[in-house]
Image (cartoon, rainbow, N blue to C red; front, side, top):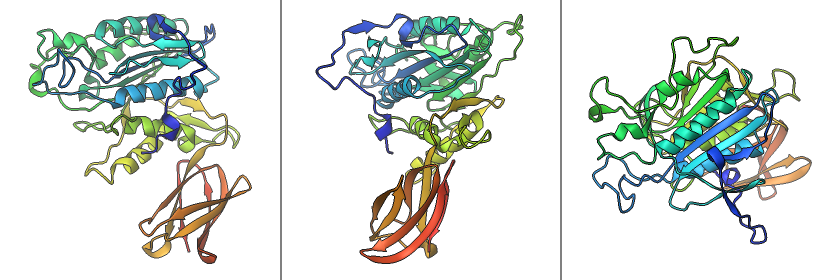
Length: 402
């Protein structure tokens, strides 16, 4: 998995040391906008003190252990929303971030160096209540929720485990979010467009719960007519990282497959130019298509069942407008299934010659290229072996070198 574009911009420069501040309501970025805005709440739970290897209070017979991917994923996604998210009808208004990991690394932004509250249930409930209030100012607001961590369940009947979940506690499910109840309760918020990204394993609760038992709590409850007094219906898709009864995959200490696919898709794989070639937009359906393609490519070489995100309960909407032409992959193969190497792929990028070396084990060459048409030539030394032309355009393109 290539995570070059997903690393957090941490405080690397010793000459730029900012004092560490505590984020009010977990907000690390706030534009103070009074117009319709997008408000983001991101939760990354990696360190569970009561799970296996969790520290002095760990329960070594717990079903679950520690995770290194959710903190990295949460930071990368928060950075993307702050630096790159672009949606003119509701520009970014705020990002709230809760993270638990071993490092306790502050999150640096232009406004400060923020200490991140732990995502135990109480901290989450306070952050979620403030997130609700920010969205409740206008029906044209947009709310985005991201959870990375441990979870149980299928579809809306899901429990998202906060950092204080303890299998030994008689009230352990009080430290879990009942996702379905939460989404139903959020329908009472004025913000009509709400998107939920859930990056967890989707194992059933099984013997952990009696039939019809509570699967968690919610900081906001549903009511009979949640849109009473509003003029718009709520559009609240849930996008899960993987299918029912399947794990969510990640590279240790790196971002998850779901996050890697999301970020790569936003660079251009998920863009569409239905409004003209200078107006590239990512919608919820094109996003799911692009993320599914990238997730399958990342996991199919290593797992019998590749990871593939799933979604439902949504109407079409634009999610993100690209500021520049999209970047998407072109896959080059040899006619007849021959290896591309040993040799070199020659092409031009923005008028400058480029060379991509290939070896005898390379049967497919992936090049991430800005939108446009390209000519590719395979050479061994000065000898031309094969050539082809192909344009780079979302979601992806394939071409045979002949």
